[in-house]
Length: 279
Length: 277
Image 1 (tube, each protein chain N blue to C red):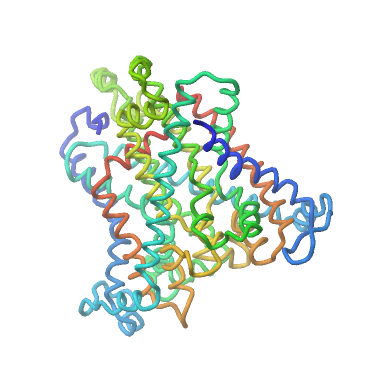
Image 2: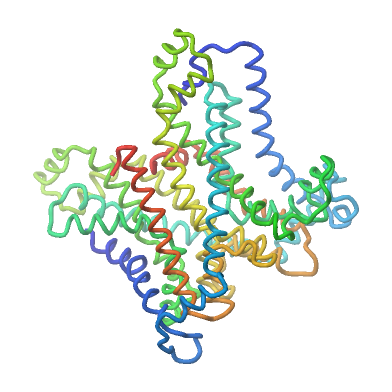
């Protein structure tokens, strides 16, 4: 990262202050996570007796057993992963040719098509779910993978980012491929896709994380258990049963967050780049 | 090659807005046939100031979140724009909340803010505040949700500000220092003007994000207590799934969309400011 802030030498007192503030900032984010993990290893009597005791008496994994006994974690996780992978993969497969057409081809209605993509950048699913839900209800597709995946199979953002990236690719590469007799589809998937690898990896990861985490769409598009996703299942841990058993809810939270945080630890650079790319 | 993309985008994002506008003119409970009622759905929502209250609440929440994330995000970007593993680690900590599910964040903060065993309440109590159930108090529930939003989104603002800081030339800061400008003056007269377009971008994107807030409301308060946290998307959700009123849900959707368009207008201006299409 750039060092603009530290471009000018700092005194020792200031360095200490900066260090202290940085630790405070870290604590503001780490303490809540730590509290989540610590609570998940407590037992119900412990929490009732002293809810703010920092450490559990001994690390009890009962809450985790309870989570796995209450909700089918494996199945929910599988549904969530299949959904998120399907969406992310479809977005890339569709964004490549669409972005290519917008960046490199001249055709009637070019400006209009680009206008639609940009306009859709501004329309969130929260503004469309009522009619889309009624449509899926009408064709009896509520509670199916189709209702979860299809509305997001095309991504305005992905199309836009692929177009932007392709604007920087010289036309000569495409011309040369055409000379060699490559079809337009070969050009898109075999010649250009490898060139855009960093963009595509970022796009895939961001899309995967967003839809793995998503609560809103699966909530409104499912009524039963058949394609319930993990965020819904974990949120249900709090709603069911008598009284809120926070150690179980926090254990569910850990199970839900751990895969994403692990992915974040491995692919932080890609995720950060993708977030920046949108700006 | 554009066909599938345009078809899907039009089918799932453009057409639904039109359908919502059409449905908003009918009274329909999903069971009996729809009945044309003209503008009655809008009139019913506007009566008793319900619509205005929802809009103002959503705006209030968004302003709190945007102000909080911008201030903290900029402060953290300036603080953590330093070499070394420690600062990289702190940056990762702050940004991690942006990657974690809203569900996990909302549940975690419910526990932190819990009236009985929450550590936030205990902490405030130690500092001399009276013990209150923060999420159960109509005055504090919405600001509390905004705090959760700030905790979740500050990492995003920080990352964008850090990228913006890279565009501030070191030579300029060094020249200012040689001219005797102190840290504050360097920030005020060199860094800040160069960051203005970045700030406009962060502000508008955060505004759009917080306008769509739903998960925190659904999970933490269900719009309560006394409707004090009923934000736009949650109100639409209530109308269709709890009250089975398609017409009113559609009317709310149309108003929500118009408000989003206004925000999007601001966003486009901010993009132009940064020299992008």
